[in-house]
Image (cartoon, rainbow, N blue to C red):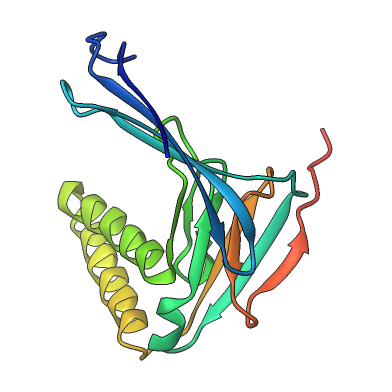
Length: 176
């Protein structure tokens, strides 16, 4: 692991930022670089993941049918969009989007946290009830009582769902 310490932080400008780069091998995906920035002064953090070799834009999908599927390994770059079409949930990459290597359960937990945040901040009682229902449906997936499709679309090709059950398609660039 390569590290640069005492760098200026882009948020607080104190020289407490540590930059790191790690090279690792992800089974069935290949060599990746994990980049990180962490400021000990203000708590700013940013991580990303890039494949060692250039990849084609790709769309991965996996039908999550039981609790075993929650353990499927996922590589998600900061440029990837995550979708759960049955729940009408789309998580678009943004300024604070981070890359990571985790499992399907992490992405389901992320979707649950987003819906919970919306429920807690929604003033409309009907929308709050819909959010409660959606939270229950997401918990059903975690308990293996419900099937959901996970889709990851990455224009950089740096993401993947590592499973024989996963389907990979070329991600066509949209015409302007």
